[in-house]
Amino acid sequence: MELRIAQLRKKKDITQKQLAELCSTTQQQIAKIENGNVDPQLSTLRRLADSLNCEVKDLFYSKIEFLEEIQLIAKKSKLNLMQTSIIELNSVCSKEMGVPSLHPYWSSIQIKNNKVFFKEDK
Image (cartoon, rainbow, N blue to C red; front, top):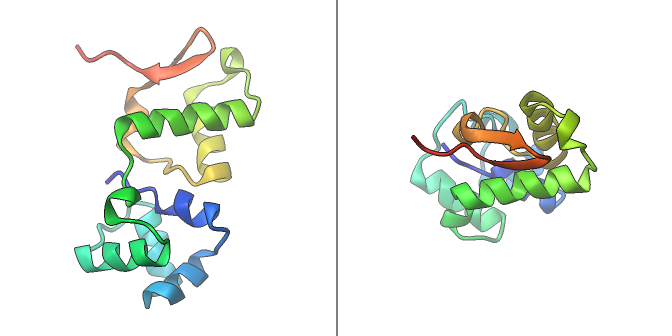
């Protein structure tokens, strides 16, 4: 699932526990959702969106948004992409900005000529 809840939560500077309280759930449940261990029900997505002051659709990454987020984090972190592996980039993005480390889009990410982009579909 292409959820970006952790990223939105971190931008609002609230903890998993605080978000859980706003959504009438547990911190453990928020952690499971953020880590992709559970697929939340639509009612939960609505509560999350309300708590994060956004629309349900904003909880999901588009392919372009995912790539733009990765590029922005790489730039802000001043990563030398010529010397950075996808695993290192993944680690920085997940720790610093809450980008899901197991997101399916990662399998399509490539670094070449100091740029991050999606591998071409074959």
